[in-house]
Image 1 (cartoon, rainbow, N blue to C red):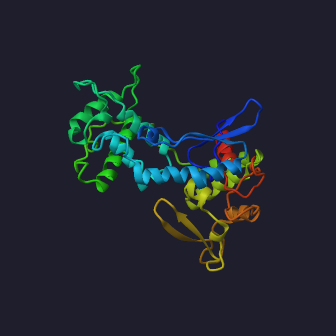
Image 2: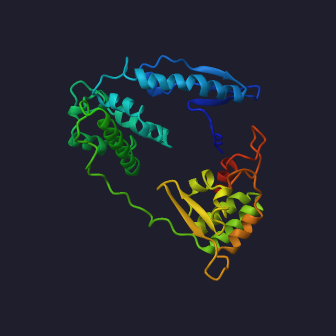
Image 3: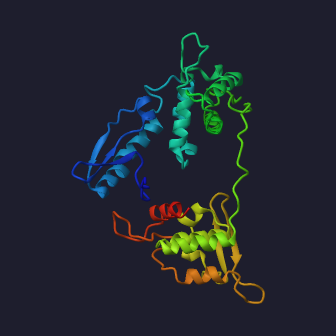
Length: 328
């Protein structure tokens, strides 16, 4: 099973297992940066994780950031082409804040590298000037891309890719209105509707109880606690794992409440924990929280110590996710 990277893992650093069994670390600038003329070289970082991380955080990635800010178009794609738009988008704050950069990169590259059948020079879409990219051109590209080479349809995937391109166009257009037309050719496309299986079925309390029993039996109590918190207090998974702190629960300022932070909307909700008659509204959940060890600032922490540091005091990532998949 693929292991997730720990929090704070540097961008563009990868690990490889040597023949000796030791783990070595390497840093390499992304492909799009190399294509745009970045002259930074790949570098072997040794086998010490702390030293490798320090070099990435303090030298290599800051150098890449400086190049992106100052020299992104030097030696890169011709200004005003779709390839230039993609490279420019990757320097934006919108792109920097993405949690799925790899998915965006793969989608944008799929469209950029598409070879236009009716182009007299056989150019790829990335070589075409933005002024020449009309909606009917992109529609033809879409109609071709929804089929793989073996004829298998992948409309849902390409629908997402078109949305990625639409976002990139809008972001770059705001910063470069003289180079990017205001009319976005990726908007208003005739996208194929994707059939669904009726949507997700809501879990029942019986499902929750059985889930928690199995999680506890597997030694993954944090997964069961997270499931109960999400069920009772309607908290998103990412907010539970990354944001929900003990200080949000029955704090000195609000002893009868829990503060629910919704990262998606930026909203904080004070949820009462007792009714008008003084009775607990969530007795089972609070009983479970009372027996949950406080291993750090966050409520949901690792069930097992981190394999690198040996510490428990880092947010639940690997063990919880693996456990949830195993239970399901």
